[in-house]
Image 1 (cartoon, rainbow, N blue to C red):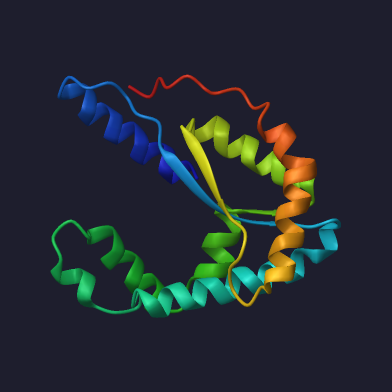
Image 2: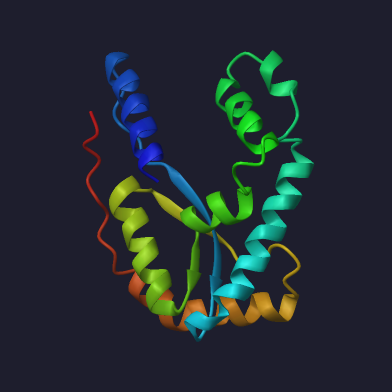
Amino acid sequence: LNEYVTELEDYDRIRSECGFEPVRPKVVLWVHCTETPAADREAERFFVEYGDSAVRHYELKGEHFEKLPGYEFYADQSKVLAEGEVDFGRDVLMTEHVFGTPAECVEKMSRINDLLGPSEIVCVFKFGSMTMAQAEKSLNLFAAEALPEVKKLKVREVSRV
């Protein structure tokens, strides 16, 4: 997440140099809310499966990004993924997205809110091999126990410039 903060600071600096105000990002989070922390293994499975499907769908281990101007970041990441040093689902998605008990979900979303100051947060509740029943259970638990607390989060002032 700290990498995103740096990128937003750079983006807002460039906007400021051009006479524009800083902006708030829209944040999309994959969420798996469970009654007990022990279900984290289930979340790991879903994140790993989704990560694998995203890597294959976008051909993230391919070399095609090297030829595209402006996609240098993706080209660098493709090399890392191709070398097998990083598991996209486990090492990236699970560190940047939200899973756990309602309290753990609120804590992670609060940290993301404090770091990024988003204008809105979009939650994805079904991914990997998760069934619709599992997704609905997660969504309903999140809505009942985490969402009321998430709605109380203070909107951080944008002062990255």
